[in-house]
Image 1 (cartoon, rainbow, N blue to C red):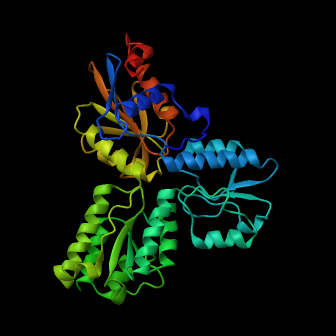
Image 2: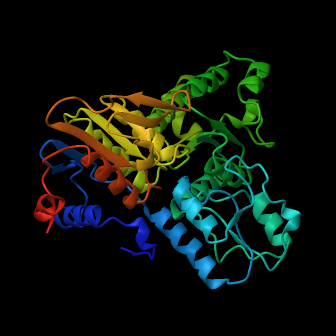
Image 3: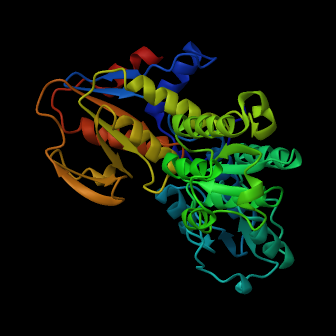
Length: 406
């Protein structure tokens, strides 16, 4: 497995030992059960998989390399490199500036760029229009293109669907950088349309079966389909791909639902002519983290704490899963834990930060599920663990607990 050079301040000595031990015990990653760190009055159930994925490590390595290799030159991130505020802030501290925000709004106008400037493409990738604009300005974009290889895999799948004359249905968050990039690449090869969730998928199915008219279709999917997309013709042959960080069961449900719609319209004997079996296009880290979270749901715990950027799609889905069983707090860092009585956290349903008092159960022992998204440094998870641990008396020493991981 490739190793990456990432700053030491993103690493956790404690969690590195746990992860290395689990890898040695289970090198083929067949065991998704959590790891118990038992400190006596407080116990932590750590997800089998969490933290930086391959694509994020690659993006961090290339971004910090860009700073090191280009002294004196202006360096820009196209937008947030990953959805973690601390990582983006670290790069800004190194002198890196942003061209756009996470929604594509301009911060630094492109016409201010020169061919001497360095531009880093984020892990989400970017649109063909933006790549062309940068190239036309003489900016070399390949050296520091950190687009995740698993995002490239989705683009290749879309290209294959287009070559086989299928239209592409993209399951993703419409305004997410990765979905915008995937839509751009897909639309260049075939008619493409974005669905956000099952609710929108049902509307699409209703149109395919003639239950909605063209005007209703246009209203439901305004700004969600490519110029080449003709609803009367483009929905005769379809295939489903997704933003690589979506919830696995939701994507599968969407694909199954649309396949059933095509069976209703064309018959089971002709389904292969109208629906492409694209299989799952989630990245490996999304699958592993979600599988590990499902194993957490089989355990008993008093609360769950998930660490990550509040605009992180993959982290939000881990929160969504944890909420199925546990009282769950989504925090961006240990700073959100104000005291043993007060925690500030993000509500994914209202998309607002809120405060909860007396969040730690008044019992002994307390069992806490602890995990993070794929864009969260392990050091931030360790900070959360250590802060929570500090609220309890007469706990076992860290080194004593860690002895089993030698």
